[in-house]
Length: 113
Length: 111
Image 1 (cartoon, rainbow over the protein chains, first blue to last red):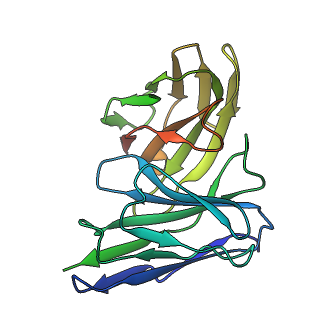
Image 2 (cartoon, chains in turn green, purple; image 1 turned 120 degrees about the vertical axis):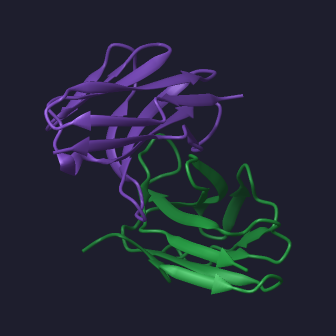
């Protein structure tokens, strides 16, 4: 089955530690995205990538970093510089960068204490 | 700045009681408006894309409509399994492939 996988589903970290969230897709999509969702709020874009080895900042990129070394993979690192990292993180992909619907993965819930 | 406002924030319906969810938007040139369904603890699931005013799309008990300022998601004779959060997002012509999401409407359908 084609789709987007995110791992792990739940992640716990101590404050001050960097943590990397995994996102893999086998849909052969060019574009990939990372969103953050806080309780009762809409999704906010962190980073997106239109093609391998290229990515752009979204609305809330501070304290996060990404890489896109392979078409299938777009990992997100939440650094210790992110002041409020506890949230639900969603990865998405679309067949091409523009004018196409985005398909979402199941999400990773990160809790930092 | 592109803005999307969804109302109400929460909606409780009895099974079979039809209603509508609203998505008001302000965007400098709409490329597309998207509706998603999100179950608790899961990623959003795509429902519809609307491109121009007057357009309508249907799927089972759901019907989405679009005007120049807002979109409605009409739910006809809802069932408990329709309970979820419904998200609206817009893509502006000058925003590349970025979506702006509303805060969502949490729908609860009681049997």
